[in-house]
Every structure is written in C-alpha cells, then in structure tokens.
Length: 421
Image 1 (cartoon, rainbow, N blue to C red):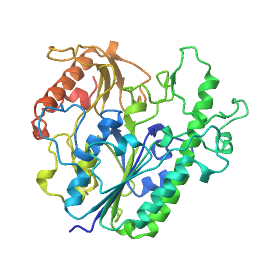
Image 2 (image 1 turned 90 degrees about the horizontal axis):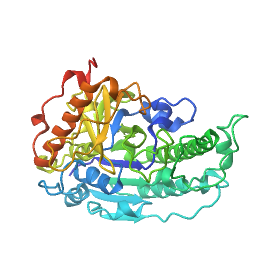
Image 3 (image 1 turned 90 degrees about the vertical axis):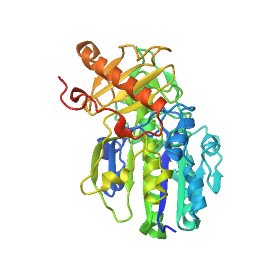
C-alpha cells in the first residue's frame, strides 16, 4: 500500500490578483508568498466552470464541463478508489453543497456550520476563516496515514468579518471610511457608480485575504511540524475567483466568463520540494487535480481519465512536458470562453443545430491584458474566427469522445498560441 498522502485546500472566491506571488504589490500575503517559494506555482489555472456543482465532478472524477453527461463513461470518484485501497479519505468543508456532491465519497465527511455575522470580528481568531482553519488543524493532526485530506472553505464568500483595524491598514487619508458591514457584496454596479463605493469594497476584500493568509500560516506551521510534512503533496488553490467590479459585477451570483471569475491561484508543493520556486504558464484546469492525485497515489492506470485531465507532476520534472494549447470554459446564459497562450475570447454558446458558434465575442490579448480590460475583436477578426472554430472543435470532441486521448485533438494554428499577427 502506498505511503504517500495528499492534502488539498480549496478556497472559494480567491481572486488571482490579490496575492503577492501573483503580482500584487499592495496586499500583504507573506504566507502565500512563502508557500509559492516552496511550490510549483501555476500561473494560468483556468476553471472550466465557476460552479461548485461542476467543480466536484472535475476534482473527484476528472470531468471537464464540456463533456456531456450522456457522452460516455464516468470515472469512479477519487475517494472511492482510495477507500478500496485502504487510504483514508476525509472531507472538511463549511459548504454543504460540496459535501452533498455525488462524487464526494469520502470515508469521513465533516460539515462546519457558518455562524451569522453582522459586524467585524474583534480579533482575527474570532473570524469564520479562523474557525475553519482551527478545525482543519485538528483534522490533520488526528488523521492516520496514508490519507487524502480535502479541505474546502467558502473562503471569501464567508462573512467579511476581518477586524476593522485590518481594513484600515489599506486606507489612505483621502480614502472613504472602511466598510463596517460583514455582508458579502453581490451586485452589479452602474456605469457611473461612485468610485469610493468600490474602494471600500476592495479594501474590505483585501482585509479578508490578509485574514486568510494569516490563517493559512497557522495551518502550514502545524502541518510542517507533523508527520504529513514528510509524506504529503499539498495543493492550495482557488475554486473560483471573486469579481470586484472589473466588468461592473461584484460577487459571485453571476457566473461570469472573465478572468476575475475563471483564473485562480494554484500552488502545488511536494514533500521533497521538487519544483520549488518554479513558475509555469502552462494552461491547467480543475480536472488536472484528479489526474495528479491518481498519479501521486499510483492508482491503477485505467482509473485515470484520458481526456482533458493530465497529471501536474509532469510539470515538476526536470524537463517538464505539457501539451495543452487551449483552456475552454462555460458560463451561465450560454457564455463560453477559450484561452490560449496569446489570446482570450469570450463568446456565446452555439445555437442548436449549427456546426459551430457564431463568429462574435470579445477578444483580449494575453498575457498582457490580465483581467480583460482592452477589447480588440474589431481589429482582429481573423483571430476571432479561428478561436471560435477552435472552441467548436473542442466542444465537438468533448461531447463525442470523452475517453479518447487528447492527442486526437488537432493542434491550434500558430497565430493563436504565439505569433499574434
């Protein structure tokens, strides 16, 4: 039986633009920065659907959002495979939707209640995040090895109860007063909204990230003192982002197909620190976590899917190999997107009966335009057509052959992956 273990910490609502390791220069995240120095940092992790119902299928069955439910076989859930091999599996979450997912076949499942909060906490250790991480420390300390310990927190969708002093740290003299409420904002801004309103929200969000960073520090300190330090692969990643007005939306009620919702932080730390302080721009998606864990625990080869789910351990090698040239995602209201190394296209789902989506959408240059602020479709019509066709090709392949090897998907035109013009 394998002696390896794995710990996966998934934080909902974690915006990729608020960590120092990913380029932020004004929010203090020393724990995340230190973890990045010990990890493989996945700089282009794109969720295929910002929906918790789907993400469980991706994490635990390796299923991409574009694979039709009726298209073919579905892999045995990860925890069920491990249970059969004598590897203990534990889920701790403060989100009941996660615990009730059909693929959440963990031997032990713990659901923490979320307490109502109307005001900021007096101290950091009284925040909802601190309560979650205290429970996480206890779970890990009591877990027997080998094990898969899955920790999923509502994260930045928990009440924003950071102490007011932490919010004040981000204010300049001319800024509005710190936001006093703990209610998580979820609304659409008008085109002529008051910028001070957005500043208050962004500062409050930054304080929540600082709380998360401090709590993560306590968790990793405990983890690194215990036996899992020598045996466990650690994944820390976002479930989905948190829109903060980049496209006039704040919060997660709308399933946006923009970077603030789709791009998430992801750090993979191996116990021997292989690939430490390595940064990659490889296009990765949630289903890759399933394949990575299958690889790590050395599960039977037939248990791993062969379509759109690949092991990230390949990226930890001295000579990393990664063949994915596109990351496709779905959203609500028939939205879709395709991301390559050079471009991001947001479009509308193809009408029923048509061979491919209509040639329309918003186009952005990558990686320069990180959160899609400068739309260039009118100047790059040929690129829009090529990307639209590439998405349709991807969709058709996903719908018709879920178990086919990815190598059967033709490579993209070079103009979509490197040379832009």
